[in-house]
Length: 216
Image (cartoon, rainbow, N blue to C red; front, side, top):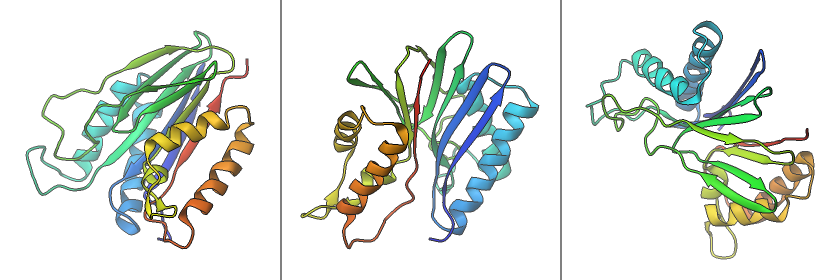
């Protein structure tokens, strides 16, 4: 596809940094349309409304997206939505807050990878129950911590000698194996591994991967 259904959103306000990795349902033009809705809604929620807590941002984002698409939460026919992970890093308190819709957050600390799981429902989709709220997670950050946000495109790509999915387990092992590299080197290595894995097969989905290391 020429246009992507995945997008990232960044914002720095006062002592906080916001980073979001979003995977919109659909590909091509439908996914890009959802990306536009999501990007504009995040700008409004954070920059105009002043929301700073990830879970509250996702709750509001769900209202904004659902309202824009005129979706009904009890409709089985609604297929438009987005999965995402959102982190807010406070430079003063050195706390990382996270909330997610299906997309988890990975942390590599002292040579080990831990996963903070996302809520099992999407933004805007009819699967979300009326009144259901997203969960906020707080992590006290240490120097050297590396955080990763991503869409499912990398893990779901078919390839290898058997033409199977790369899978989440292999993503975790790969990140651990390259943790000593700089973030730029990690990006190049992730690209190289995926090209080798995919081989002659077509890319089945958009791929979005964001890495962030705490250096001070």
